[in-house]
Image (cartoon, rainbow, N blue to C red):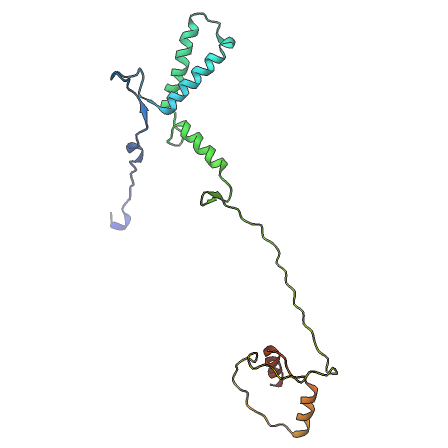
Length: 188
């Protein structure tokens, strides 16, 4: 087999290195029967025992066997939870993950707070163009030097004298740099 055809195999030892927090020894160095127990198993035993005590009027019809059921049912549930795995996790952690997933905002979180995406809005703008008529007299003010755009000077043409005088009388003098640029483009 060549180097390019080698089969790559990956191993994960994460689960073997993860040790759950367990309760397994008594203070006098004795072991709990059936232990060690995880926190999930202990909580299951406590909750199951509490529910059995609160509902004993419904199910307690067996005399002395009632006390055996109050011990065996919680212990049996804890024993089942020892071997129950959902996606490699104990059921309590899987339920916790499901709760966190369902309570997370759809857009996620940013700096610990829900991320809000604003709705898109239609942006509108208006532009007004006023066109001056040729009959209207224009003010004879020269444009300010700061407003005139710096462009390469156009080559000067020498038109006949009579039409040039008529052209300067028809066209008003530009007020802004944009008007001067547009007037310069019209001449070419």
